[in-house]
View 1 (spheres, rainbow, N blue to C red):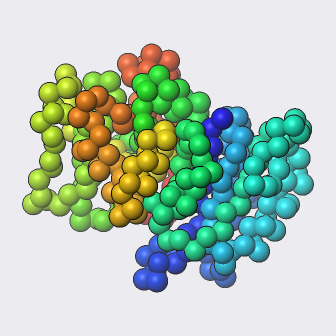
View 2: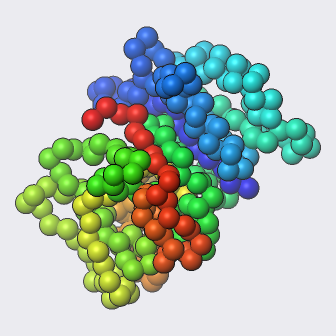
Length: 289
């Protein structure tokens, strides 16, 4: 059974940098988009691909807003339940949403707080992203490649279904090294005067390495329990994109690749043998840029 961690909003970090909320104290996930909330689109996408359990994480101050939204949502979607876990004896329910209210301002600590509840593979879904890319294709690649973390990347130069997430710093460029099988062998955001570090052991185990700057991390990840173990063992890791991924790539791929990429708008047949071209798929950031 695949669990999904969907962070609807973070608690304020105190410096205003991580406050993902709308005016009026409403979570940004409840922002209407074409007469439906962003969160509504995300939940329907997850249900379409057979997700059974969703951990919906939000700051405590948005409890009333989210509970009111979900009460209305399940009224029109009777196959979805709200509770601590899915009651498999009630076959009428296809998916369960477990509300987790916590005043934590970073995804690393959020995942560590859920370590006793997430017991198998899981998907991390960024609250700021919408996608219609087939989740089954992402999880299939994850399973076939025996990956510990599989990352959905967007091609910023694509003319089809543009999907871009703004980088954390406009003065830095993100470099992503992709191997011949789709393995991610390097990932770092660096300035024009910095160097990109790639371990020699990594280079020795790949046939080719393509360093790219046209890819953007959508912050949608399929993870094994190894990722939870890494987070628990390294409590200083707070950010997934800029801290967890580079750390994992550099320290846990000395024997064999365990981090793979699925790239929107690029054919991935050579990666898994089953994942078709995603040209019809698109992701869209709700950020303004």
